[in-house]
Image (cartoon, rainbow, N blue to C red):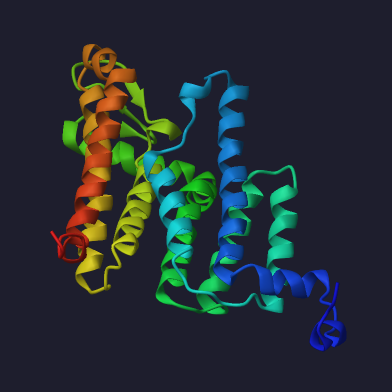
Length: 284
């Protein structure tokens, strides 16, 4: 067996140098995102199983799954770009957060990685679009929930006030009186419009970035309409439940929740598609 002079004299690469030259930069980022999303979503699954609701009670929206797929797949559309030393440092810190037995830290890691890509690891448009989607993903998966914990009562009072305004009866804090007589209805955290509003925001970002939409001032209108429509549907549902105890038993169940969830999903997707209609239907 023979070897050329260049092969004999070339310095051997260390493991870090070999990694930098063997994996494209965006595949490296995509791999980190896959680990972070998988670990974060697994936390939701385990929480559901531990609470006794079973696998069918897992609180993972189809919008969240689409955002994971869209963000990571867009990230893989970039051409070859060599990994930087700073990327490896960020990736190492990312892995530390992911392997810790606190699932919420995976979304913190995804937030940090997305901000790093958006502000310091700028490349082609695909990389930025993918990072923006995955950054928006962390809003309903982590940050909106933390914000809700700090401002639970004021947020629930807004829902209760709007529902009471539609019905007319008096409101006391986060409760309001049934429209047909005595008794009060309490607006609980899982009835709030806040969580669905963050999902509507994620839906708008995911669809518009997936379609390579060029942002304009009209996007503010379409995104607001998507969020407002979610609030309107949820508040209307709360108001209908408050008409009477009969309405409460009729609407406040799995079938009623299913109808509301599909309505909210349809409105969020509809307004998002309208916002990106030029790009989505340009080749139709």
